[in-house]
Image 1 (cartoon, rainbow, N blue to C red):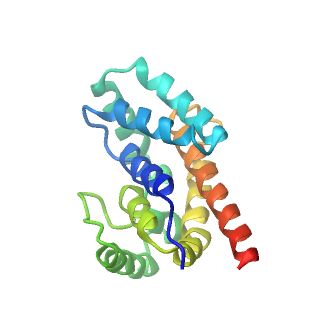
Image 2: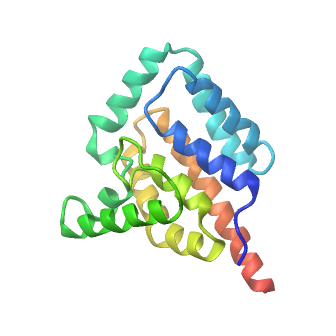
Length: 184
């Protein structure tokens, strides 16, 4: 089984932090993610660059307010994979239990967010082997991300660019994994 490359792991960890509540070093994390993306995904880099340009005009307090307005006060844009897939029903509870187990299995400490929040899911994805990563991404992460992107469509929210960049990274990784599987 092949594992993710160092760049894959780095970029997924950085996206996890970018999709967390902004702290003082937030712009530095966006810059670090941009630097990593320059190595392998120009389209994702372009989307994230647009987000960075928006952030440059904001104080940290304004960035925090944008985050809260975008994700905490707007449930259709929630960053929880299980919520996007199942809403508030019993299946989401099962998904949360499974996610908590998977976080533990992959050595990802839970933070203040629920286990299915992208800030937890992306670092976990970076630690999965390729087959497991592909299966989870296709079955859960991509469908949830597509719903998140649909909720942003036409609203002009800068976080749409972050999710578009992440989508490009995931689609590219799935494409590479499919090509590798054809050669095995």
